[in-house]
Image (cartoon, rainbow, N blue to C red; front, top):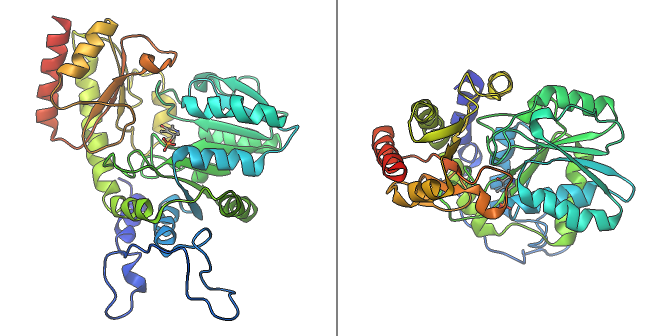
Length: 371
Ligand SMILES: *Cc1c(COP(=O)(O)O)cnc(C)c1O
């Protein structure tokens, strides 16, 4: 980890502590409130539970510390992404999306933005710059993409979008702020599903938006308050607790994933492998330039759908589950949801199990699945 991330990780654990009064609990209290005691002039005081909650605000403070920009919490990753679309786009605008990114973002745009008179185009992440960005009000990118782990050059895309008069939005879910900071690379807005590694224990859904632009943040805050799509205080509390161990979990997960990827690349049962940290991977050059870590997701292609299912079901240290980023390693065959990937393609999310145990279990299950 670089010095800057170390500093952020250490400071994160003391953000709340710096502001405590004598006798306050060190841990964050969970505040469940729709009403606040509010006699007289309400200005400057928490007013109502749809606009104010001290538990979300503390979680937002932690996220904004990591992102290096003001942040707003949403009830899920899609809550954050749909808020960005609906609060910032209007009829006649065009938006560019990745054709190989998280499917719900594309489905949402097709299903709900088109009908509002917003034009939609898609492009593969790997060739995202081809065609330029002229005429787009918003350019949305996801790198490394879920599930294919393709990358595009964030600094170049953000600069070209800005030169063409648009705004760039980066879905940073696969990386977290400890793996990549799109705002520092010039992006206007970052969105992420905190459901994944930031939550990390597979027990909550959450998402956030961060931006250094006040007008953007204000529009999104108004959107959240007026649409009513607000985070629950309990989820915010759980997320805040999880963020305190994010750096440690993410570090373990990425280190283990890097070693597993090298071993898997040489495994007889593996037909194809994608991991941005392997020098031979097509994503490596861009990844090495803009990512602090290479992540905890590995794309493993086995020889058939049957081999892939047998591998997933036969490995005692893999949970067969959709979603990723939990402490427990998990895996799924993405073609089962219709993603445009090989039927034997498995998205492997590396968790926090000790490396040697995990490798033994994976190796054994791969051999059994191939045999
Ligand atoms: C999971 C995911 C989302 C959506 O998050 P939810 O919390 O499930 O709404 C968005 N983008 C990416 C890249 C994801 O992996």
